[in-house]
Amino acid sequence: LVFVLGLAGNLSVLWYFLRTRTATAPANIFLANLASLDLIFVLTLPFRVAYHALRNDWVFGEALCKITGSLFYANLYGSSLFLTCICLERYVAVVHPLRSLRLRRPLYRVASCLAVWALLAAAVLYLMLRGPLTRPFPDGRLACLENFSSDSWKGRISGVSLFAAAVGFLVPLALIGVCYPLIARRLLEMPGMAPGSRAARRKALRTVLVVLVVFLLCFAPYHVTQVVHTLWRLGALEGCPLLRGTYAARRVTMALTSLNACLDPLVYYCAAERFAWSPPCSGRCCWGRPAASRDPQGSGLQALDNGASRGAQAETVTSSHGAHGGA
Image (cartoon, rainbow, N blue to C red; front, top):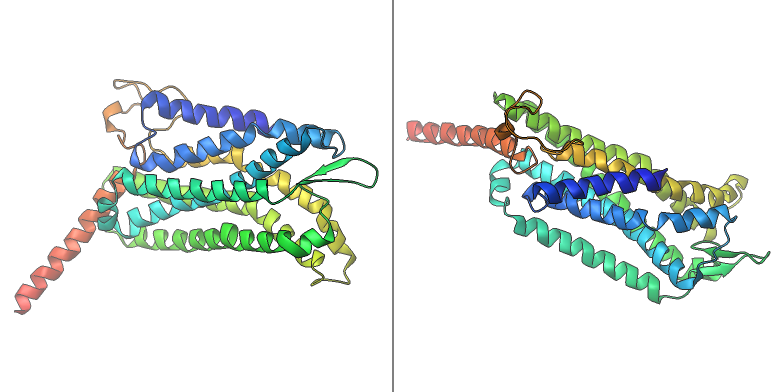
């Protein structure tokens, strides 16, 4: 189900961006990269489905185990980073509108995306070159991405797991958790805005909220389970029989992380002003609104920038007049 919905949803998003030529619009650059990453990941899901259907017996060889395993973690933490970039973009547009206008050039977003892809490539190479990811079970079945030895856990696996949980989950979650109330407070403090700006500020809040829900639903259970399981394997947590259940829980939460490939299209729908599930239309037939009234950047951020900038400029003019009056 995740494979079908994720494949259809992300292909639709990329098709829309290519058809409307908005993939390189400033606000859509992160979305296009996130959709591409999700699409690459869902193409590996049939191998994982076959693995679990065969009662966790990997029959596709070490190379494919490394590829599918590496792409699983690349999608997990790449999605986390791209979603964080989307939230930070909304935060800057609302809370620091004048700075946002200076950062509207695609160069900054392209550089951020290249940095994320470089980190993912380095992580994939690390996993590919650091030894086998398959290991036989006692009954002869071959495990992939699980059933590691105690020495492996006490060596590279525990350190990598805890570092990834901190940098790839806790830090992005903290940033998103801080951005949402700051955006809400700033929008409540803004002076009167045009209807387009009011719709854009609701969209900005909705985007960050959807991203936060995706984080908590898809990523939080896995990382909580992974950290507890890692500490148990290291011997830091002992004496509780329930801790042994984290091994089975890891399988469930790993499957839950795959849902982000289905839920990310909701982020596209919230974040891209012009994105629609139906083909784009022309003239005055678009839901009773002129097509020209839609944001050409595909984000709604321009309306936010304009409304917020007017408020910031008004404050600047007022303070300037006050200073001249005092002089």
